[in-house]
Length: 186
Image (cartoon, rainbow, N blue to C red; front, side, top):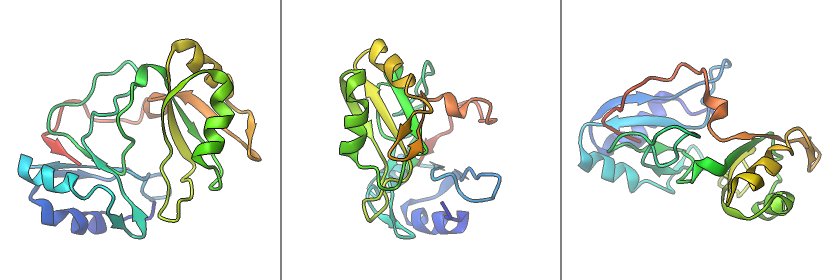
């Protein structure tokens, strides 16, 4: 989360020419942990997608097409988009976003915690290179009732912390995002 725009540019410039680069930051000025890069060509996008799993500043990054993980009730992004340090593809209709997780949280412990809610179809918990949880995860449930049970766990204690659970995409509302579909993004 201390990635600077110049470092991101340097990592992806060998892929091809950018249309645009967006590195959202917190009030502190630190990176939020994801970025969007629009490329001028599909060839450049394909090269960027090949960087999935590469390391940037000691962190394994995820590079995937933007819009693969659409916000709840929203439509997926336009063609030719991709995103770095992103979330992965999910069926967001029954998906929750969890944060304030301990860095010690494991995939197994998180699954066990939400098991009583219902069947988990997919879970994505980004980790640092050392395999440590980055403090947040997305969990997709099979049905609405399971998702509702998970949402009821908001502010419950999990591994010594008050876990925040909300419908996926809700944490983005009102952040002043741009409309329209940029060309090819990473």
